[in-house]
Amino acid sequence: MPAVTLDDVRDAATRLSGVAHHTPVLRSRTLDERVGAEVFLKCENLQRIGAFKFRGAYNAVSRLAPEQLNKGVVAYSSGNHAQAVALAAAELGSSAVVLMPEDTPQSKVDATAGYGAEIVTYDRYTGDRVALGAALAAERGLALIPPYEHPHVIAGQGTSALELLEEVGELDTLVVPVGGGGLIAGSGTAAKALRPGIRVVGVEPAAGDDTKRSLEAGERVKIDVPRTIADGQAAEIPGELTFSINRKVVDDVALVTDDEVREAMRFAFERLKIVLEPSGATGIAALLSGRVPAPGKAGVILSGGNVSPERFAELIARG
Amino acid sequence: MPAVTLDDVRDAATRLSGVAHHTPVLRSRTLDERVGAEVFLKCENLQRIGAFKFRGAYNAVSRLAPEQLNKGVVAYSSGNHAQAVALAAAELGSSAVVLMPEDTPQSKVDATAGYGAEIVTYDRYTGDRVALGAALAAERGLALIPPYEHPHVIAGQGTSALELLEEVGELDTLVVPVGGGGLIAGSGTAAKALRPGIRVVGVEPAAGDDTKRSLEAGERVKIDVPRTIADGQAAEIPGELTFSINRKVVDDVALVTDDEVREAMRFAFERLKIVLEPSGATGIAALLSGRVPAPGKAGVILSGGNVSPERFAELIARG
Image (cartoon, chains in turn blue, brown):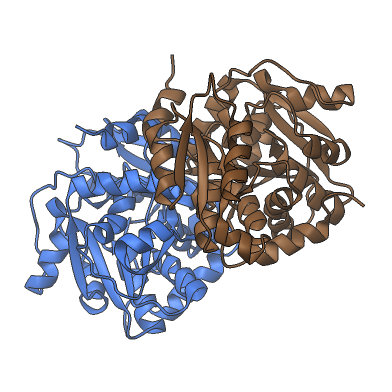
C-alpha cells in the first residue's frame, strides 16, 4: 500500500474546501505559441500565504487530535512553509512555534508572526534546527509539521494537481517544481492515478539537481549546498519518503538555469500580469527554454509568488 | 429606450465566449480585514491584452458587416485600446490601422504591431488625431472603433461586471475605475439591471475628476489635462454617450491620490501577487484609503495590468 494514494489527496481536498483558495488556471496565447502547446497554468502563487505550502500544512495540522491542537505545533522554515504552518494553526484554533534562522529577512519574520506564530530564532551556522525543533517539540509537547516528509503534507500538496486535472481534463504532461519533493510527490500521485498516460516532469534549478541525480542513480544522492536564486528548491538531498514516491510517479526531471528563471519571471510579469518568485517560475522557464518538450496539453504548477517588489526588480534587471 | 441595455451586455457576453478570458475573481483575507468587507476582485489585468478593453473592442468589431471587416478598422490610442482593437481585428479576420502619438513608448508600439496592426504616428502637439482618424477612415473606407463613445464598446465592457455578478451573486457595492466612462457605463448598466439595490461607485484620480464634477454639475464639465500616474484615466471630459448613461447608473464617484494608487499597486504585488497598472489599482486604492465605504460585499473591477517591470519599480519606489 503506497504511503499516499489518490484517496488521501481527495480527502485532503475535502478538508481544504472553503479554507484554501481554489486557485485559477490561466491561459496565455503568447505562451502557447512560444511553446507550441496548450499550456494550463495552475496559479499557486495566488494561494493563501502566496504558495502551495498552505495546502499541505493545513491538511497535516487538521489531522491532529484536539488535545494536540491545544498544545500546538512547531515547524522550522525561513520560507513559505513557515507562513503556511502559522496560518494553518491559526485557522484550526491551534498555535504555532516557528524556528527561523536569525538572518531571515524581516518581512518573512513579520509575515509569519502576523499569522500569530511565535518565532524562535537560531544561528544557521552553529545551530541544528532539527535538534532544536525536536527539543522544543519534546519540552512543550508540540507536534512537528515537516515541510515535506509527511504523508498528510504530501497529500495536501497533491490537491493542486487534482484541482487542475478536474478543471482541464486530459493533460499530456504535468510540469512541477521540485525542492524537497513534496509537491511533485502529491501531484504525481494524483495525476498518475487519474490519468495513467500522463507524463510527470519535475523541474529543478541546474545547481540543485539532487532529485534528478537521485532518480538516475536509483538512490538518494546528496549534493553541495545549491547556489541558485530559486531558494525554494535549494535542497541538498531528496526526502526519504518523497523520493520513495517520486521514483514511481516522476518520469523525468528537467534542469533550468537561473537566467532562464529570470526570463520566466519577467515573462510572467509582462505577459501574464502575475508575480512569481524564482521557484514559482521554474516550470515556465522549462517550457520557454524548450527543456521540457510538451506537445499537446501541458499543465504547469506555478508554486509561489513570495518575493518583494525590490528583490523582484533586482532579479530581473538586465545587465 | 436606453442606448445600452442588459440584453446588449448579455449579447456581447455570448460573442466574447471562448474568445475573451473569463477572468478570475480573487479574494484576500488581508484585504477583507483592512477594508472591513468581503471584497471580490475581478481581474481584468488577466484579460487578453492585459486589460478589459479587449471586451468592448471585440464586441464592436464583431458587429461589422463582412464587407467592412474586409476593408478594416481604425482606432487612435496610445494605450490599451490600441492593442485591443489590433487583437480584435486579427481575431475576426479583419485588419487594423492604429494612430499613435510619435512619442508612444516603443513597447506599446511593438505590442500593437505584434497583433498585426499597421501603426500610423502623429505629433501629439500639432496633429489632431480625430481629424486624422476621420481622414484615414474616409480615404480607406475604414470603420472607426472609438475607445468608449459607442454602444457596442460600452456593452462589451459591461460583460466584466456581468461575469462578476453571475459568479458571486449579491453585491452591495460595485467599484469601477472611470476614465472616458465606458467601463462603468457598461458595468453599471448590467449591475443595476441585475441587482437594482446595488451601489455603483466610480473611482477617478484626484487630478482627473471630470466625471465627478460633471455628475455634480448635471452636465459635462471639461477640466485641465490631468497630471496623474493613472494614465488610463486622464480624461479631460466625459464622453457624451457615456455621461448620458452614467448619470443614471453611477451613484457616486470617489477620488484617490497618486500616492494611494502607488500603495494599492504595492499591495497588489505583495499580497495578491498580481500586477496592476496605476489605473487598474484605483479601485483597491479607494477601498484601502477608506474613500469608498463598502460594508457587506464589494466587487471591484481591476481594469488592467499593462506596466513594464521597470516603470512599476519606479512608481512604487519609496522616498
